[in-house]
Amino acid sequence: MVAVSVSQRVASDDQLARLLQIGIVLEEVVEARAHRHYQQLDAELDAEVETLLADAAEESADHRERLESLIDGLGVDSVPFDEIESLVDARYGRTRPEDFDDVRYDQLCNEETAYKFYDDRIGAIEGSDGSFSVDREELIATLAAIRDEEAEGVREVTEVMERR
Amino acid sequence: MNTADQYLKTIYVVQDSEDGPASTGSIADALGVSPASANEMIGKLEERGLAEHEKYKGVKLTDDGIVRARDALQTYCIIERFLANVLAVEDYQAEARELEAVIDDTVAERLDTIIDRQPECPDCFDPESDACACLEIAPGPVEPEQQ
Image 1 (cartoon, rainbow over the protein chains, first blue to last red):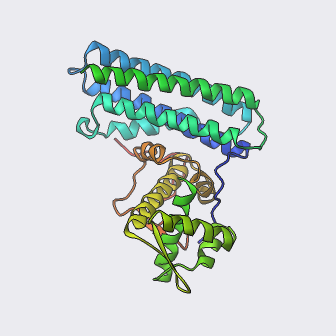
Image 2 (tube, chains in turn purple, orange):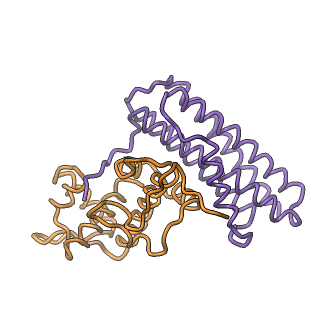
């Protein structure tokens, strides 16, 4: 067995880039799931849920672009986004509607997971003394803005759920 | 996965390979920490009812500890499969070891939706190679399958 690291800090450009890539994949998962819900369950969707899904997909695309721009700044090779997109699409293309949770609940999980992910990253970067090729303040500000939008997403989905 | 979970996962694997209680030295070696640090964390795990330490014998996980250790091992397998088969990371083991401390279980669950994890997970984990025994490395950057 190989020795493992017990550090929870983010310490290098490479590790930061990898974590941002994971963020991109999570955003892509949100987009793909919202799209699948929209396609497969459209007869059951009402205007409110439809808006929720459309907003979630649009927001994820925007977050993805902001993360990609941060990775570009790090000068680290990244997996091209269209490859990730086709992989995620292929996965969800095989998923039957009954394998998905309730659309609102699923959306809540998406938003909560994303919120936690960005919040953890911000904590780890703030707790790290490593230096990155991108401006630390700008990095934290971008991640914090995305995190706050995820928090807003959690609030919106919760409100829709409470009304029903 | 937090530090306690990393210890639980390590104790589980060492205990399994030694077919009995895990010695503090083996745990410290596997984690790359000093025996004193390992002892301190083992004490905390005991306080939480997750492990039992017997003098001169070593550490044994309780039933609750085993459940948490298996969850942690599963999260590790998800990270490994994701890095190797989705992002085509060559040194996926080294990166998985770095990332396991910073990837939350809920995030791992989401990543799990786009990898083909085997039903036997986490029993598929091979401590010798420090990798999932069912892991097939994709030649390209992704592991696409026909719809």
